[in-house]
Amino acid sequence: MAWSLLGAFAASVCFGVATVLQAVAARRAPSTPGVDPRLLVRLATQLPYLAGISLDLLGFGLELAALRSLPLFVVQAIIAANLAVTALVAAQVMGVELTGREWAAVAVVCVGLAMLGSSAGRESAAQVSPAFRWSILGSALLLLAAGVAAGRLTAMARAVALGTVAGLGFGVVAIAARVLTGFAPLELLSDPAAYALAGGGAAAALFFATALQRGSVTATTAAVVVAETVVPAAIGIRVLGDQTRSGWQAVCGFVLALAGTLALARFGEPPESQ
Image (cartoon, rainbow, N blue to C red; front, side, top):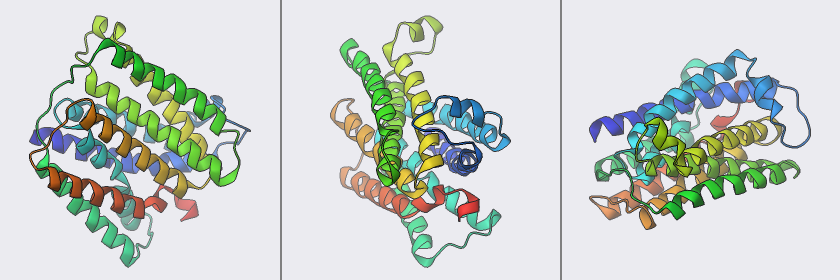
């Protein structure tokens, strides 16, 4: 379990750095109305975005490994706390000054994650019905439609809506990864959860990039953090049987980590805007 926790923390570091790199690239790319899948193609020509995607892929591999033996709410809270990493990197490398409130938020995140890590119990791939696996895929398709509709909104509503849909998409990825029973090609091809993982991840990446490009990055990031953390955590506990060694400690740690992360939401902003 210790290796899984280290993997989750390493994934958070990867995602934290990748967020800034992708935000920089998204702001440089030409803007078009609505949600345009070609945005990902344009971003793929930019080195910062490619570097960010590489870090995301590495982080996802580490997250996937962690989800095989840790509860969803622990892994998702650790992953969402990547903004604490982004804040520290921005302070040291980019010269961004952290306020006293933000240093306190970083400390709160660290305390919350320490409580979560020490309360986590060992889990294995969740045994769920075929209907549940198909429902994950159905959720991914619904989120795709919701994201397209959200892209037609204006100003702040669009950023929050796209961020929420993107966060839920990342949540679908986590839930699908949690219920995968194996990685053999035939197993993956016959498992609806595998398609939900791939489709949900691609849709979430598109909606997140769109929101970063056209709306408030702080609002977007906050919406992503809440959606990708709270919803999978609830499903993990209620449906997948995730457990802890200390319930009150896990709840307190989860709340502290999430609250501290939300206080650092501005660090999803690209360096030019800091």
